[in-house]
Length: 146
Length: 244
Image (cartoon, rainbow over all chains, first blue to last red; front, side, top):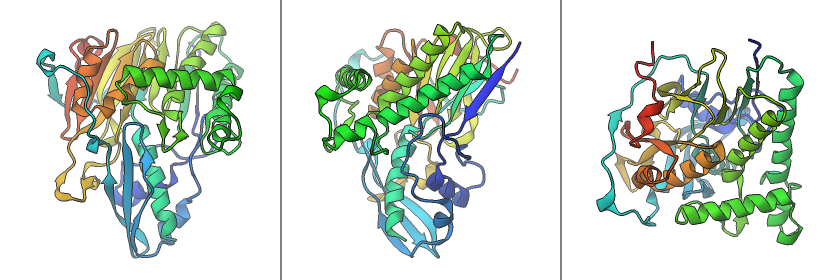
């Protein structure tokens, strides 16, 4: 069977990528490369080179960013010109609103510890929403560190 | 939105140009809805340059859909913050669903459209079987923790993809934030799965009960301790012993 797969990676997650790159070896998001197609928007004003080297030491608080279910706000700590830590000042779980679910009527649902699967799959479902808000707040914090 | 988009069509007569037209569609959606582009309709609306009455049918439809979802989720889904409208939380699922509709209009039946991990599948995969969809480990980008078989369904995941030890509450620095790391919803369309995954994630632990009560939907919620809770009918999609 003929098969055509086209992948367009739209926007580089510069900031997030830089963080993961510095903090870890394997969990960087796959968003690399450039393309003009597709639904891409972000405040990609921060370039990776700036992230790597140009920051002044200190702690910088980013703007509060909307994650649709609450607000994310981060503080970036810069040491030796590099991001040494990112702290969450606001996080969606702080949300105090209540939801009308009758606790007594809830069925008991099955639980399990997650386990890595080795299977080949056609496609993978994963989240992007919170990380976008994270990125927005962090970009704002880093813009102050220049 | 800023995300990778993947389209796979396995119908034999598919040509590159068919796929390209779908990417053009996504680009047109972005031009209309991007809050990062000053000239987009939504930015001009937020800047007060155009009124609600002057909005195009598409933008008006999105605002209406967002309003409906807000009601259906007890207010948890809200695209208006600080007086500004940011509909990207609902546009993505809507655009993927419409893209799938365009492929069907072109006569294709076996495909998926994936934008940033939210997916509409149609028909069968290359092996003539239901599409095999992995659910990403929220703590490890390159790992999957569940495999489901889907045909003619939408699947979407809302969540937090930041490594556990980098997240903490400054008021209680010794305690890790507990809560939900990711929330995956399977629904009749990706549009519906996406908006309810976002709403359910906002509800924290109660979100899985919200999905349990929603007819035609299933969910897989992973908390920050790595414990998953699933709706009572979720396992019908799951491939056991997925390594085989």
